[in-house]
Amino acid sequence: MALSSRAQAFSVEALVGRTSKRKRQDPRKEAPPELQEKEDGKEEERSGATGKKSEQPSETLEEKDAIQVELQGSELWKRFHAIGTEMIITKAGRRMFPSVRVKVKGLDPGKQYYVIMDVVPVDSKRYRYVYHSSQWMVAGNTDHSCITPRLYVHPDSPCSGEAWMRQIISFDRVKLTNNEMDDKDQIILQSMHKYKPRVHVMEQDSRASLSWIQSLPTEGVKTFSFEETEFTTVTAYQNQQITKLKIDRNPFAKGFRDPGRNK
Image 1 (cartoon, rainbow, N blue to C red):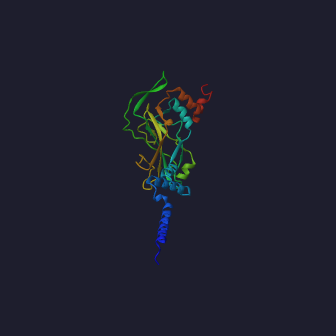
Image 2: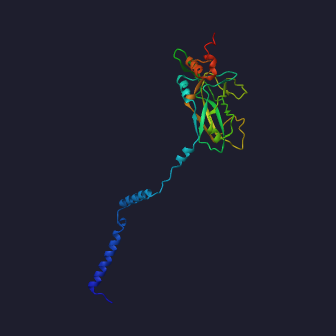
Image 3: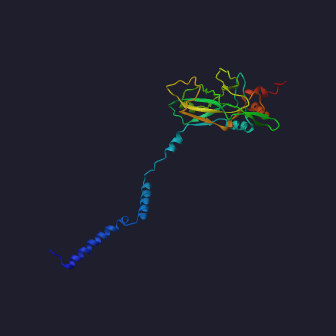
């Protein structure tokens, strides 16, 4: 049935009106790009607030599980370091005081590890002690390139990560010597030079035995050192403050503290 001209106009107007309403219900289609970006950003914020978690950076987990070594007795080491730590070296070998003692964290409890110590030069200089100023001065340069640090493998190695983390790891059996022909696995150093101990943590490699290790592998080793453990090697103590502090704090120096010793 044909519509009258008035009815036809009304139908067209109604159709156009419904289309306009549909367009107004989705204003983003008509909004400029700048506004659309803002709206998109708001929607992302809203979706994040509804429970979507952002991905955590991998560094957070790696830092949490990283191997850490903490120096024990650091306050005593710092007292020595403040006045210039000296360590006696002899042909027969002399134990260090303070000794290196550490606590390890972040190991895999089920894996086997070696814990190793060595002592390396701080620089290539030779030193001398100046009595009137009570300090160490550079006396000259020495080439350390031909000196290979000797490694001391902790006697409990290899051991599980769980066992290492339960204990304080002590290197109190380490002895320092100036005998370059030493065959007792003591650490060989030169007198009047500055050195620093290092602690290495290495996962056991089933393909090799490290019971007689002489050098560290280039990979798979975590190395730690502490500034306060640096020391100068001597054959006799130069600084009287060092002598007094060692007698006061070293439990093996009881005889030197005995007031009746010199009677």
